Length: 364
Image 1 (cartoon, helix red, strand yellow):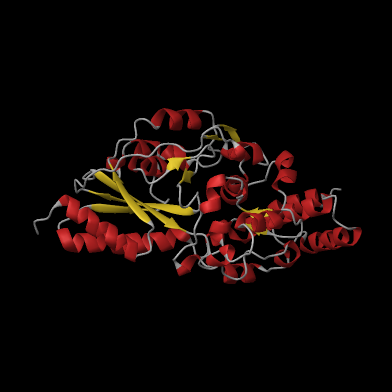
Image 2 (tube, rainbow, N blue to C red):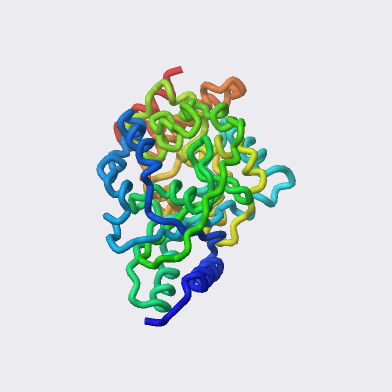
């Protein structure tokens, strides 16, 4: 094996990571003991909702060496995802996004999901980097992680100084806000450890105040069962009736707590072409997407994170959006009638879950 200096190796890895499109990389150890009481309390209160894998894999989250026994370091990566097209507006990009949320006919998709599936994009590049490291210092034991591996990734980002945890529970960075993805590589090399950075949320609680469903129940505490991102993506069943009006026209995810965050004023655009907006996903209208067949959905969403929820859940979400369009004060009688006709057209065409939400949408 080649003899190397760990500090020089670290600088080389960071250089390679930059070439692969990562905005920043930091290093930390595997100790997550400080975060475990919060995780255990969150699970005990049932705030994970239907995400049973959070309980099933809790022991792995508590001890990453159960994932890779030889691991002694975690490389934590940030990859910005804000599409260039979003920042090419004349005004603050956040105002453009707010205008879509306030247009009851728009079908609003969270910004992160308008490009290619980040799981695949980050995993491919992290694997490439890990293989480059392995070629340099063989033998190497490593494991790449992008969501699918049970790690407390925000905790590692926080420990390494890559970000701090905002009151909405998302990772925050001075130069990127929260508009970035996280990925990790577990390795068995004793690289120098980076220092954490301080929290810069101060007294601000704009994210807590803006949340439509009050899912941020206290600073740094999220009840997923109320979160619109959870309800439209992770939750497979019927959306609670009392929460449906609060979802508005958000058909995949919710960016409200990010749009209101002052730090996202400084978010920069991505240099990764995979995250450019595809199929005009930032410009969709509820009427148009509710006419999609399953084949159309699968064709347009192939390679997108949205593909994972499937056609039926997609149509469930849009039915809720159309129901809220009908209920909106500014909707004209003509548009309301068009919405009802669209809903009736798909009634008893897909499955019982979609029908339940169509019937709710029509019940005014």
